[in-house]
Length: 251
Ligand SMILES: [Zn+2]
Image (cartoon, rainbow, N blue to C red; front, side, top):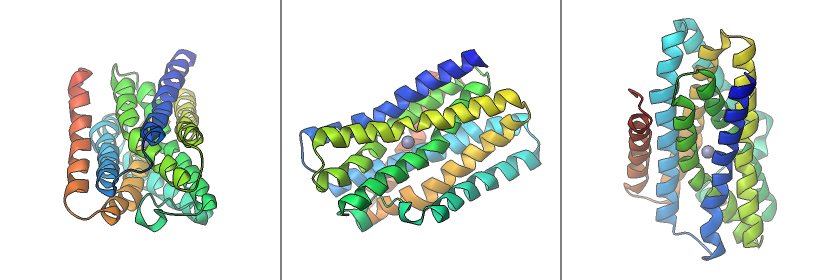
């Protein structure tokens, strides 16, 4: 388990830090056009949907009973819902509602995205815990791509509220590093109790689907009209599919 844990923590930390990359353009330009921003949010949602349905759920179903998989998905979705209830001011609105929030709201948004990153970390950690060659790295690369828009979503409101560019970039990178927590929990739990793996994979899938459907897709369409966010989502799914072949997986 230790070996898997070390590999998962290092890879997840790298994927998390990529969130800072998403914020880098703000060092050079003051703002990002709404059309680009919303397309990227749609893309982020597509990657989450692809990870859940193409990677996590098939593996959960391979190894677990129907009851474990179905209850895992529901538990993951309910977990995110409860998190949002418990932290009402942390409801992340990536787009229009908080396009110009105050500094306090901007910080809360950053924390919210950091918390929403925990299921992504869980997914990556459990990917390593499956022991199937290539699954962990595939999820890490998918999340890294997906963290670029999320980093931007953290940094943009901070920048608009006068936080210095380098501070906004650092905050974005930090928000991504919470994924290491999720990955550690995933690897340790699956390592201690074998039977938890299928449930955990389904749990991570349910949480990702819920965040995607509840936050990213609606916000993407709120921020800009037109078909661009939908093309972003489609591209996100294509990326997850392509990564499967690149890593030599059937999916
Ligand atoms: Zn992410």
